[in-house]
Length: 408
Image: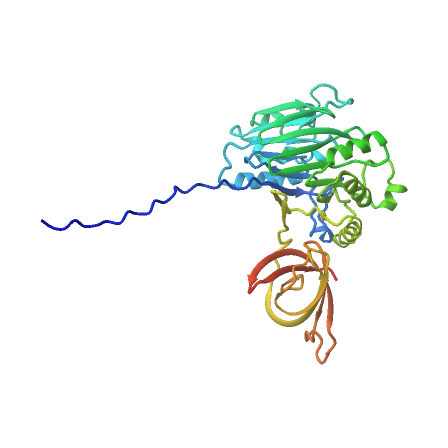
């Protein structure tokens, strides 16, 4: 009889428990310009399409905020996506001025019966019942458009809302508030499990009741998107009564309402990129966490954290370089820094720089190139001003890859 073999018991392992991903809300800017689209080169960096934002809730529901010319770009994106068939979206139209509706006839998903859209806006005293539906029909009526509304085969539902209304859409609690703007305008507040976004385009300070309405809309919001079309000087003189706000009024409201991040929006068509850089600098002097809306910018919000990404403005011919440079600016925490580095990737438009410090996105850097050899025989350094459009931490030996656009 053979001896009994002793077998050690296998250690019991606990079944793996899947950890649910943290809920996030994603906000993408497809159009940020006010009044009329722009195509001139001086506005390329911030973008020239009129208002359109895409807000994706933690559950994946797509909300579309306004239907300016940026809506056409969103439509192209949706059609090219793998899940392009059967798109369902909830569309919030703040008011009926041209710059907020002019993208509707060019939104390709509206021409497919596989898609479905739920539209929300208010009853206009000038249009009466079914205001938004009538806006659709009028935009595509002869002789203004080659085909009429019957060409749009996607099912559409039109829901009338008013200031003070609260209602639910999948993944978000929505609150509407009246804003101070000629012929009326609604602001919308979206509360999600990942955070709160308040959208208040086209509003002018100065009406006490509606100023309070704006503060209530923005109260404690993680992201507050506010009209900043005019300068404080314009708002006090030549543009008073036009229905728009300024960066200074927005910063004041953000402070009073306990907002975490302010986004300047609805940029004036005459505001160049350099002018917007200046406006942003001034705004950050009054309220620390300010961003200037840029076409293609994506803000991801989750668990109280905010991640901001700004895509390249244009593709440019780039060259590998090896210029020694001295860079100075401010970190994300607001601390001044200066350090020496090497620029290895550069074009006439911008550069990619590796730094030990992490500057704030949409901040300004001073760059000094030592003897770049641009003028033969010259030993003078080349001084440039750059604008931070990209931050990639821990790319190279715990350094930060910083993408900048040269502004001067």
